[in-house]
Length: 96
Image 1 (cartoon, one colour):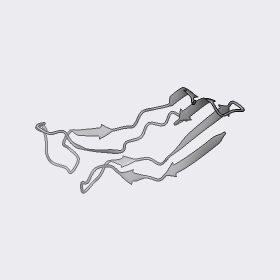
Image 2 (cartoon, rainbow, N blue to C red):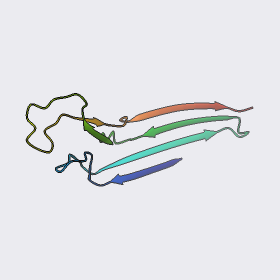
Image 3 (cartoon, helix red, strand yellow):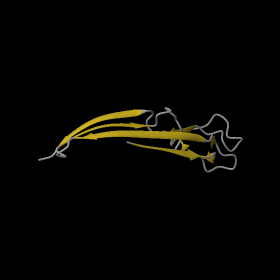
Image 4 (tube, one colour):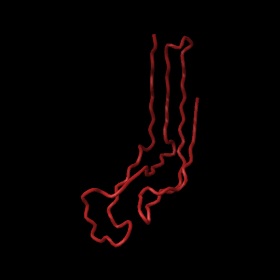
């Protein structure tokens, strides 16, 4: 059995004078593994991002988009990249 949690503080996800900011967040993961006595079988349940936290990992201006008004640092359309939300994996391994 294993678990971990990680905290990320606020950060800017655009490189502009007045950047868009990502709020701080926590992400928690956990896993449980069960092995047979001879080690030939393994069952695993792996859960990532248990709190189902969505956060931005990067972004920038959308290529080819023309803003209707370009009077401020963040008036251009922006695209953001986010990781998957909550994921769970059930795994079985057999070794000879």
